[in-house]
Length: 377
Image (cartoon, rainbow, N blue to C red; front, top):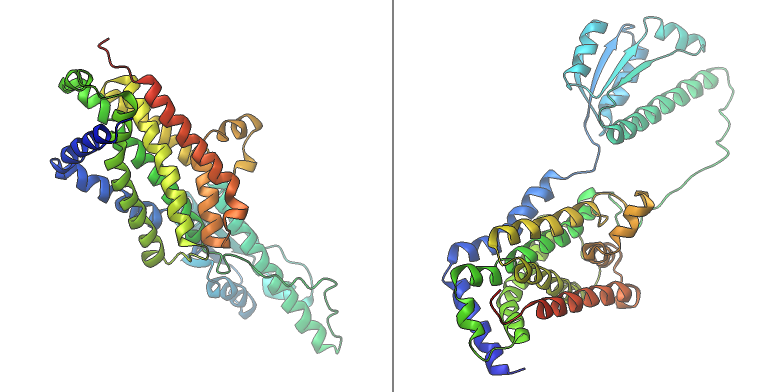
C-alpha cells in the first residue's frame, strides 16, 4: 500500500465533498435533525392519561375518589360526562383513554362498609399504554379503599393491621425513570448507523455513473488504497456527527453521562468505521446510486431500529429473530452506549461488544476491498 496514493484519493474525495456544500451541510445537519425529531417525539412515559368520569353519586365520597385521579401526575380529566353515551363518545373519539363510572349508591355503600363496583372502561387499541394506565388506576383505587377502611376502623377504635410486606425500592441508573435517558443513547446508535451507510453508499457508484472510474482504474491505484482513501473524509464527517450527537444528548436532552466520554468516542469510531465500510461495500457491489441509496436504507435503518433492542427488547423477540439480531452491529453499540451513559460501565465489562464491532468493521472493509475490481464489466 502506498501512503502517497492513499492520501491522493483521500484528498480527491475531500475536495469532492467540499465542492458540494449542500450535501456536506445535510450530512452534518441530518443527525441533529433526527435526534431532535426522535428525541422529542419518542416517549415511553405514560403521563397525563386522558380520563373521562361519569359521577352518578355526586357526593363527597365520590368527589374524593375523583380527586385522587386528578391530583395524580398520571391522569388528567378531559371530560365530566352526564350520561353513559357521552362517556362512550369520549372513548370512541380518543378523547379519553380510561372512563370511570361511579354508581349512584357509591357513598351509601362506602359509608356502610359494603363493597361497591366502580366501572373502568379502557381503550385497548394500544395494549401497552392501556395496561400501564390500568395499573395506575388500580393502585389509586386500592389506596382509596385502604384509606376508607382505615378511617372506618379508626372510628371504632380498631387500628388497621400493618401490611405483612413493606416493599422499599431503590431505582439505580435512571432514578427518575425518564424514558429519554434510555432512548437517546440508543437513538445515537441508530442515527449513526444510517448516516454512516448513506455517506459512503454513493461514493463508488457515483464514479461509475459519471465515467470517472475508468480514469481511476487506469492509474496504479490499488483497491485497498481506493477504498480506504474514500473512507477517510466520511470518517471525519461521521466523527463530527458523533460529537454533535453526544453534545445534544448531554446539553439539550440532559441525559447523564456517567461513564468515560473517551470510551464513547472510541466505540463510536469503531462502529462508524463498520457502518462506512458497509455503505462502501454496497456502493461497490451495485454501481448504481439509486440502488445503493435504497439498499443502504434497507440494510441499516430497519435492522437498527427494529432488531437492535432500541425500541423492543431483544429478549421478548421470537428465537429466530433473536438469532438474526446477533448480526446487527447496532445491537452491540446500543448496549455499549447505554452501559456507558446510564451505568458508567468500562471496557472491562463492554470489551466483548467492542471486539464484535471491530470484527464487523474489519469484515466490511475486507469485503469492500475484495469486491472492488479494476476492470470494466
